Length: 180
Image 1 (tube, rainbow, N blue to C red):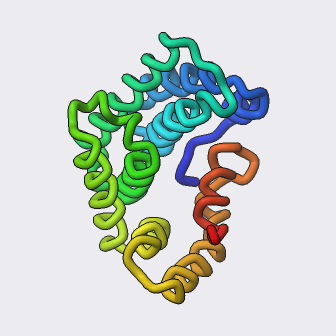
Image 2: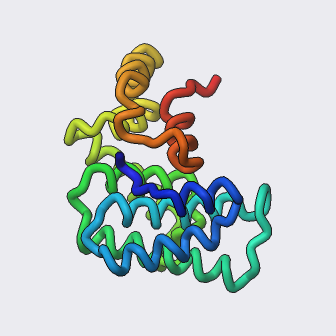
């Protein structure tokens, strides 16, 4: 699995306790700082919680600020420590491309953040990462090529994502469902 999961993350996600889930993951990751799957789960949950703010959640200002700073700190840690990990590359690339605004605390211009996301996806794609190849194809290849890559992703997705976790379900849907 790409993203860490346990009974606590499952429970927090199911109950919509997103901020508590991120706090739990942060503490757990501090104890296991070399765990890539735990790091990615923390990063993605912070991003997802910020993305839910407004449509589904009402974060307090201090919670929003905490999560935004945490997400940017996670990106900087990725850049320093896990920058060659292909799953980290495409996931951060995806998050930066989809919600560029959440990374403005990095001190970069909006367009630079978006471009960095695209280049991270491309780098992981060039290294044969299945998911990055699909994301790269969406912007750069024919519909036929996109469908060929999506078919390959569908065949293997459950080897990488846990369908019992909401965050994983999000990625399963994003990576397998064609948007018309």
